[in-house]
Length: 332
Image 1 (cartoon, rainbow, N blue to C red):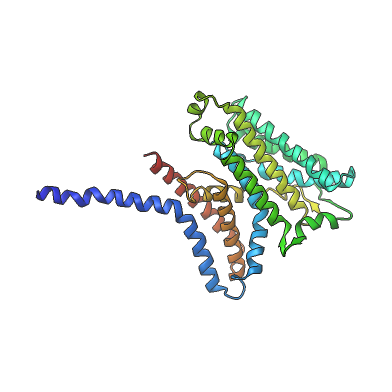
Image 2 (cartoon, rainbow, N blue to C red; image 1 turned 135 degrees about the vertical axis):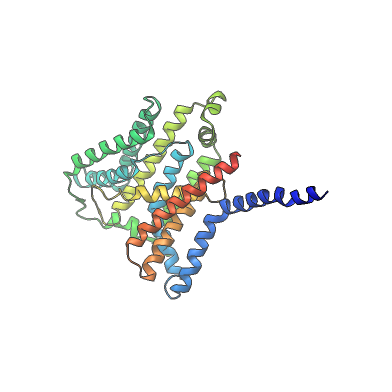
């Protein structure tokens, strides 16, 4: 009897620890976001907790969110794409070049860069699936080729519109006081969420990412699904490059490159939101907003710019770490 009573607490302790860990794995990322909001509201009470600043944060999140949500599709299938920043840069330059040199209208230029993004995604998907090259090598190689195409089009110089007013209106125009990019972000988020969670294609992507062999045995055309994920990813990167160019009415050859790290940081951090390390659209959106809130907080508190890199790097490590541990716990 004595032996049994002595053993009881020892048996309950691991279960309790596991419960707390699972809870933290699901809601820890939201706690980080809440802590950022509370601390910054205390430190900068006159500038941070305002409606205008909230709209500003959402507006600053829009481009990062679009490219990160596209990346989420590739991550869901168990792959990744290192060419998204290069694709965004190419899209901006191509859009401006088409409008300046070929007299393309803004809608026609948008359609053209979506086609460009789709082609880049097809090449990535083809190299990864049919040539069986690892996504690391494939997307790095394709991204380098994209840089070459970018320089070929622009000669390495920024491409600027002569009369950019209509193009600038896409970024600076407002409806009900909210900038257009916020609406574009929300519409794309809703569309991608529906595609990933309410369609056979989206369910197939999640099945491929969960267990590729089992998905293939169940009749899913795995390679086709992976290629489509790359296409969606690259097209979202192209939209990001288009909107980025609309901020200034011009495009530089490396303007979109900086979105690579932020997209990965947001996606991995978002995988620790509400799910056991699984990539999903809502989580990615929360991840992007967390990054934007962090950057906004650093600026309003008056910290040096290099703290943004520390914060983004830590967020990426935290997201990968928590997501990996959560997946191990879920598989155990």
